Structure formats: structure tokens, C-alpha cells
Amino acid sequence: MTKDELKALGLSDEQITAVVEDYGKNYVPKSQFNQKNDELKQVKGEVDTLKGEIDGLKKSNKDNAELVAQIDKMKADAKARDDEYNANIKKMQINSIVERQLASAKAKNSKSVRALLNLENAEIDGDNIKGLDDQIKALQKSDAYLFDLGKVGTVPGTPEGGAKTITKEQFNKMSYAERANLYNENQELYNELKGDN
Image (cartoon, rainbow, N blue to C red; front, side, top):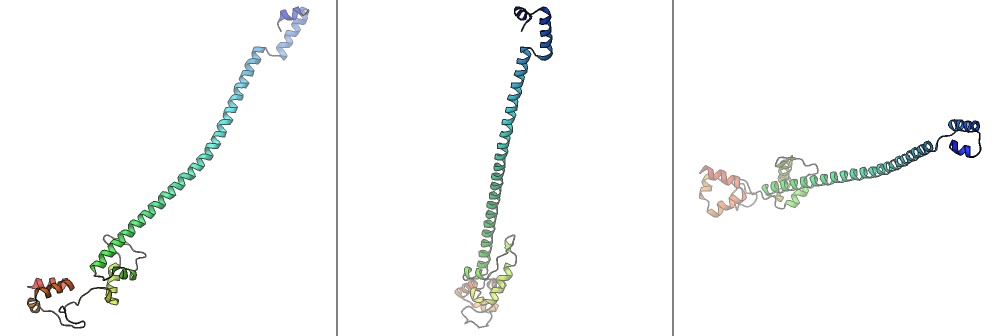
């Protein structure tokens, strides 16, 4: 209240002065109260905003944890696919090398010979598989019936067990058909004898 309002109420000048002094000590003006009230509302609004942001951070951290878990799962799945892809590529390379070497060794039935090979821990070394040649050579000795080896140094058409060797002179007397047969059975010997001519 203003001094005029207090005077209108019938207070004396002394009473008005006492009331004004009391106002100054124990009360704040309305404008100051409104200012403080506005500041308090603003602070309360900021606190509410901060609480909302904290809740949002909690939620997004929860989401981030889920997102991180999803990303980790995707990485693990991608690695598993890469490992599977690399294993399949290695398997295809091994199959190709084995088939090529079995054909070169004149295996009659590559599936049958392959069943006898130990390829469990096969290691590719360039265009070969470590130890594969040794395994094939061992099978050619132990299970010769699986390979079309021909009789090295024997005349084509000689009954099995015949140990008649071919000389350069005999080779020169062979017919075209006999030479072709020798070539099919033992190309190395054929080239050796032909080269000596």
C-alpha cells in the first residue's frame, strides 16, 4: 500500500512511517515479488527441461545399448558369413586341385580314390595341396586297380604280368595303332622312345 492509501485509512503520519519501515524490513514490493516469482518459474521450467533431457538420455542410452547390441550382432553375423564364404572358397579350391591331380594320376574313378585321401586338414600351397602327391603315389602302389597306369615299358597288348620291355628297335617297327595305344597307356615312355629316333 502507498502512503496516500494509508492516509486515506485514517492513519497518522507516525503510523504511516512505522508501517512503511515495517514494509521495508519484512515485505518486498510486488514488482520484486513478481520478478522473483518469474525467476522461480523460469528455474522450475529449466529443471523440468533438464529432467526431460535426463530421461531422454536414459532412454537414448537404453536405445544405444540396444543399438550397440544390434551392431555387434550384425558384425558377428557378417564375420560368420565371411568365414563361411572363405571356407567355401577354400573347399572349392581343394576340390579343383584334387580333381586335377587325380585326372593327372589317371584315376579311374576320382570319387572312389578321393574317399581314400585324407583332406581333413588340407593346406593349399600355390596350385597344389601339401602331401597330396605322396598320398596319390601311395594309393597307386597299394590300390593300383583304381588307376589306369598301363604297363611301363611293356608292349601294348601283352598280357598282364608280361615283362617284355620295348626297345627302340621294336618301337620303330610298331604300327601306327600300336604306337597310339602306347601313347594312351604310357605317354612318358612313348615320348622317350620317339625322342630317341
